[in-house]
Amino acid sequence: MARPDRPSSVYLDSDTLIYAVTEKDGCEPVLAVLRLAEARKLEVVISDLSYVEVRGWGKSDPYPPELDRRCRDALDSTNLVRVEFSRRIALRAREYAYVHHLGNYDAIHLASAAEAGVNVMMTWDKGLLRARCVDGIWIEEPYEIGEPTLFPA
Image 1 (tube, rainbow, N blue to C red):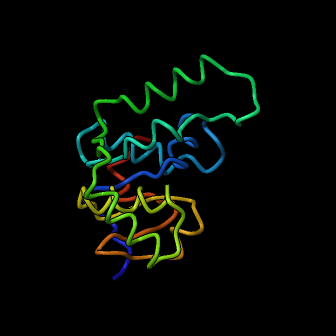
Image 2: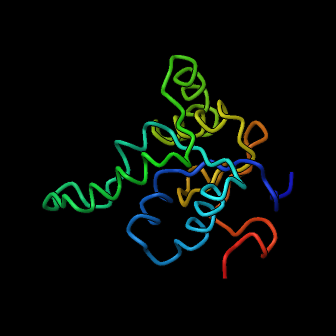
């Protein structure tokens, strides 16, 4: 399977959302995907697990209320489709964790992407990237998709 240039749906792993909210270097492809979702040109999916993971600050850092609000606002966007954690996803994640040597949270994200039936999963997670393609889901670092005319100048 080759990388889809024009997927109809993309799953964003938590790390990509953190980059987008905090505007870290390399976030532009993720921001472009979010703009496509806002324009209703692309279905963008996340897991409810992202509410735990997408914080943008370290465990020992002082609590930043403004950053926390920005993270929650991004996750609550009506432009995103959220996948709820269920027994079915848990069992699929359990299998993925074993077969693909993934950590538990990574396996849950992959199972959520599979449940949603997405074409592409975008992540910077090395464990997930090693899997490359699972159950028809292309796994890759964030990249610009579609024709250049889909993106605002």
